[in-house]
Image (cartoon, rainbow, N blue to C red; front, side, top):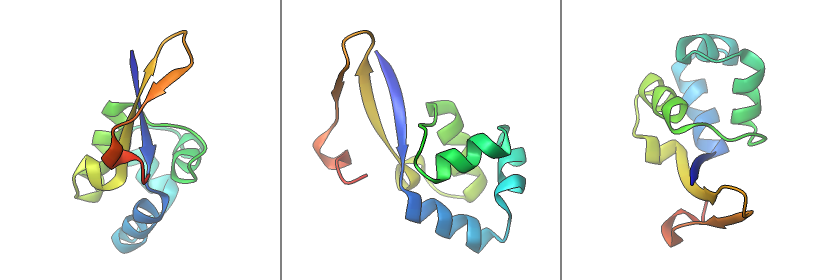
Length: 88
């Protein structure tokens, strides 16, 4: 099983703006490329749990504020999601 972290796009965009940094600066601070970070912020790709944690720490909030987790059972195409996370 693999965990994918789905982002709350509005929340992360708001927190980046409040911090007063560019996406490039934020990406460099959390250790990913600017293009990958932009794709994350726009909801086009998922973050690993480790990257989600680094982003949350950088933006000064809990991971759960920015992300919700989806469990993916490798090779089956089956995803399960906790009810309280379905709003992401």
